[in-house]
Length: 264
Image (cartoon, rainbow, N blue to C red; front, side, top):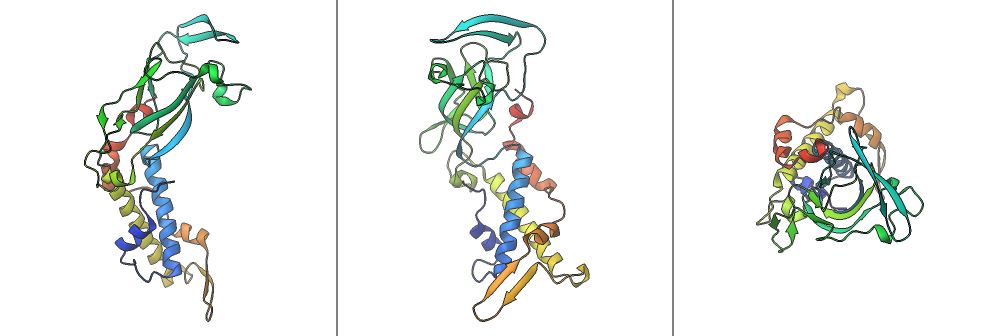
């Protein structure tokens, strides 16, 4: 899995690229993990490029007036009930959308928990049954969709878990680091690095503060064949709160998936 910021980048930013102690490296790893978690919570999705399989819609949107009709496949017949307000747009979570591997629609799919759900007869054809709202080409010449919206020929099902989609989404490492000529997601990288650095320094300060009532998170140490054991639970407690700074929240604003947050 791709990380927003690598441990080597954090150590370099802290001036510890060479000669970092075991304790410093442990604190850096914890600071990175908590920073990544805070960034994901703020964005409401993981911004790193990856292939994912998800079920939509996330909640039952069949509210208000409804319409029912029979729909048949090669082997089954379904009584399909939809909301008259159902949309022809499906909002995926991890943006930007890079490509759709497969998409299935099973009105009784129950998010894949039903035996035989999402069989081959429920597989849909891209360009015929659905099409992503591709609005650009990345630096490799591949299509991408900034808003993560997929259009349908007809309304999408309104029952939770009746659409299964496998797709690639998120930003690639060079895009996160501002090294791409088309997609610049360096604001995410910068916010994550700043948060990780701040947490490392905060943890280090508290761990070495004699007024804190303890010497630090070191639990055992020996000389000769050197060994080191750190109390990672204690280290995490030294971080205190995990909210991000307002200036870092501002860096993330342009990357938030508002369509997903609004339940589109």
